[in-house]
Image (cartoon, rainbow, N blue to C red; front, side, top):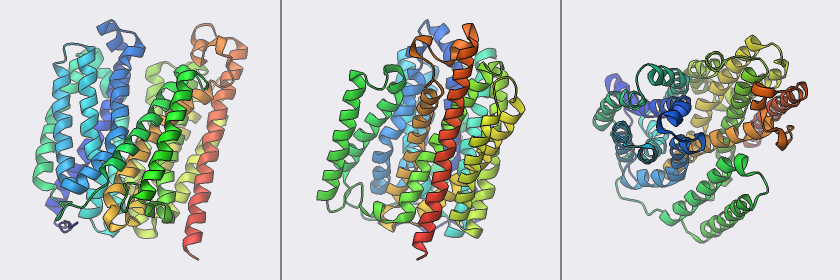
Length: 476
């Protein structure tokens, strides 16, 4: 496969970046906008929350399901082509939602948005690695993580204002002009990653892997509602195990499989993809628990709790570009090790928040967690893309994005499970504290919150050690 040369002139580079960063920003912004509006949508459409949540869940499940296929499509038809079509589709779906006649159609169009998001998420890191030289990639990837953090930061507040003062249609219509402009810029300036001769790709292998991802996402979505050992969950476990075996068998029999064995033989790739998955899982689990911790045991209202929790994405947005530049200068691994240790420290220190006070402490520690995450994300993307074989950059880029998305879903589920793990099922969950909570329930809830913080802190510290051992092993 042939690719066009990297872009060096500043005007073209700036506009190329604008096209690349707009999609991730609005992708994360829309998640926050919709999540904060779910209770209002339930009232407006006369549906229960379990039904309305599919407006969010349908979008979140579509992206990881299609990322493997969109990475392959990028390698076959051009990473720029697939990315740009995805941005246009995301914009078009946003406009379609505005004219939705009901909740069902809104959910369908949100899934269509997810299709578009999977197209640009699967290819943007590959495009960055093709358009910018190695000594600039860390800074640019830091800007990518910064745009994700900024979208996460603004989503809940923007959604709250729009749903309260305007209408639910305004939440989606306000995105359309910006997305349309970005799509035009992308079509004009993102002209890298075009294939010369189309390479033979393992489409069936990608479909098999997507099916495996889909079952894993179903497990993450329903395990809290169905319970660990129900018949439905056992069927999903069996399906995941069967698909894992089929994927392994298929990959061993193919000359050039989608899940190339070389991905497992390169230490930096193994470690980087694991970090992408588990760091996002740890960060999301701590945030979910902290949100309930602040509102149940510390008695904060949702608006105040949301404002304090914005310390995480704010510091993530600030530290991402800075630490990306540091990784260009000093190497990715050192920054990743320090970032994971910072995340682990912040998680362990959350044990000091307690049950009667500590809002200021929680805010500072969530900011520290976000700063550590910024130290991890862009240097880790840089490490992964720099060690990817030339013919597998598309696959590796899509796998890194996939790890991030699955990690967010798994972390959210883990947070809900762990913070309620000590509360008897007949008592409900930690939200019972807000209505008829007893001192014993508060004690068990605090134990659950602290369990989450300890487990996720330990995961971060073990990941930091894993990266250090990987570096030491490669240095032999």
